[in-house]
Image 1 (cartoon, one colour):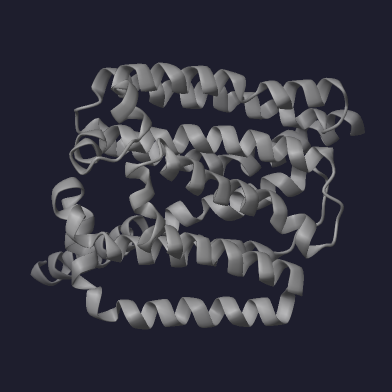
Image 2: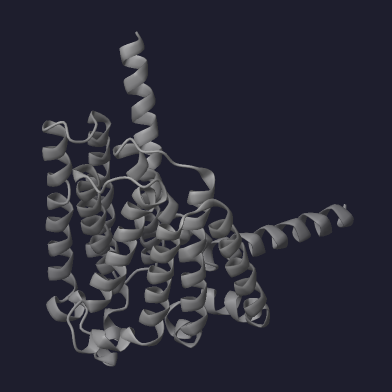
Length: 301
């Protein structure tokens, strides 16, 4: 009996450790990038392959890992759970980063072309430059952080497919870019709400600092509504497939966590709302693929 309890507790400790590593190591957040690439592929009816998805996953994983370790001291106040977990693995961090980088380089050499390699070098360099050089510009240029990071995500999510398969940058890709950019801006500004007090002390000109939390959330509700207009118009004009309409579900998804944040912005529920906001992008290709299956089944019958 005692032995069973010991093994049960051991399994729980290992499971808890793995779960914390997945959450705090950037593994879940990094899934957003391949989800955007897959979403672009589905909407534009373009080819996709597993190596490209893995490459798109490794890039934000490397950037997030670097960013988390760079800002580790700040997490003592804002995210103590992440600080405790990452601080324990700090000595292994260089080896982990080397592994990520070697794996990324190997995949690029084997599976990609020079156009994609050059683009990846530029956006990865941009990520490191922001963490080390450009971050201070947010003190001078309003919402610079949001514009810079969201533009990087949007370009990566949209251009991976046409660059890899040498496709023309047609109107469907531009529409997807606009949608990703607007929804990405909502996500980026949303996370600034939690840090608005610290950002204000540091002199960072984020939107919640400039407008205040309530007005910032109102603006995010408006942006959430406007973001779907390009998709709806493009579907009506038959520029993108009908299944894209299924993404309107995420208007209500975003509305939910924005509405909750307005009511409980200083409560513990914020941690859950942050996870909900990040998971949105991961669900996009899932909803699109389900819609595609339903659409094909309907016409088969």
